Every structure is written in C-alpha cells, then in structure tokens.
Amino acid sequence: MIGSDNDAMGVAILAWLALVALLGLGNTVGYHRLLTHRAFVAKPVVRGAFTLLGAVTGGSPVLWVGLHRLHHARSDGEGDPHSPREDGFAWAHAGWLIGVRSPVVVAIFALSGFGQQGMIALHDLRRVLGRNPPTWRELCGDLMREPLMRALDTPGVMPALFVAQVALAWAVGGGWGVLWLWGVHVYLTNSSWAVNSVCHWPAFGRQPRATGDDSRDVPWMALFTLGESWHNAHHRHPRSARHGLDGGFDPSWRVIQGLCAAGWAEKPWLPKEPGLPSRVPPEPVSRSAP
Ligand SMILES: [Zn+2]
Ligand SMILES: [Zn+2]
Image (cartoon, rainbow, N blue to C red; front, side):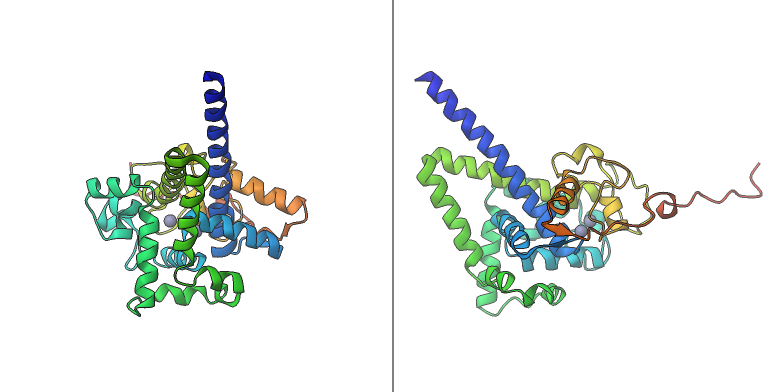
C-alpha cells in the first residue's frame, strides 16, 4: 500500500515537472519569442500547438502579446505597464495586474496561483460591457488576422479553458489534483512575472549592453525562466531567437534549434554582432585626470 502511494507520488511529481516544462515553453518559445517578437517562423501546426500551450496559464495571446509589446515600446518609461522604476518591485512583479503596490497584498495574490485567471475573467467581463478600450490591442493587428488568435481572444474562452483545467484536475485527483494544478499555475505565473520584476531591478544581475532601460541579465534565474532571464540581451536585441547571446543557459533557444533541425520551424533571427559592438562603450578617459 505504502509502495503504491509512493509510486503515485512519483508519477505526480514527474507529470508536474513535465507539464511545467511544456507549458513554460508555450510561454517562452510560443507567446514570447514566436508570437510577440517573430523571432522565427514555425509551421502552422507548430505555431498553433505552442499558442495553445501558452494559453493554459497566460490568457489570450492577444492580451499577452499586446501588453508585452507595450512593455518593449515604453520600457521603464511613461506607459510601461510593469516597470519597477517608479512603482517598486511588488508592482512590477504582479501588483500591476491588480493595481496594488503593497508587497504583502501582491505576495498573497502571487501565491494564490489562480489569481491571474480571475483577472483574465474580469478583463473579459469588462470587454463584454464595453468598458475596456486598451490601446495595446492596436499592437496586435498581425495576430488578429489569424482565426486561432481571434478564437482564443473571444471573451469567455480563456475562463472556460481554466474551468476545464480545474474540472479535469478534480476528476483525476480530487482535492490533491486541484492542489497539483495550483502548483503549476503558481510556478509558471511567478517565473514569468519575475522576468518583469527581478530582471528590471538594479540589485540583481548585470547590464552589459546599452539599452536605455533597466533590463538586466540574471544568470541564476536562467533555469527557472527557461532562458528568459538574459533580459538585458533581450531588450538590446528583442527579435533575437536566442537570449543567452553570450553562451548563457537558454533551453528555449535549444528548443527553437531543435524545431528548425526537425523542419518544423525556420529562419531563427539572430543579431549579427552580439559581442563587442553592442556592449556599453567604456567611459572616456579624462585628459585632465592625473
Ligand atoms: Zn523587460
Ligand atoms: Zn520581449
């Protein structure tokens, strides 16, 4: 009996790790590098698959891509939806989603796991009531030409997908199943938000490239974010399919390479001179210095 309990626990842990990796890649390879930045070209079925994986925790692709394109357009300046520069770390992490700067409230929201799904449902409700004219939707004209993106962006579809997840988790594992799903959402939302907070916070990492914003490369976050924490390199070359430009751990890039090798994707965009030419120039030496 104890042995079978241990077996079930082992299967649950392995399934959790596999799902987190798969859905995480849906966010990093799919929503971020493919849909937002067009870093490579994928066959329609691959594009669709990564989009669906990203949608499980990230909400509508139009919602995610629009907000992220706005972040790059206004990075750490007026209009950036989640810069920590003026509003603090907690705001940049998840406070911006609920309009709160209190670290305690943001921590509770971040650990709620399903809080983001509630905000997505609220967002859809506002759209239905005609009370949400977000300007960032105008940044997604390319996505709105695709039937799948329009379907996923239809109000109510994302909340229905979430309800289906909870129902499936309950059917498979009851309360433990829902707790397992909660863990998936807690991990994936926070690893994605940490790129906005930790990788724009001056206390962490380094900024080897001139970008005009506060974006940082944070090596210890590379595993948890599947390579997204080379964020200074990303802001310097947003379209690059590879974020670990200096050889840093970047599993999302390895997946893109694998997709290209298999013939499922092509044309990964890479900056021509990722090295010295894009680095911060050295301070000029003052002639009057001793
Ligand atoms: Zn950023
Ligand atoms: Zn980006």
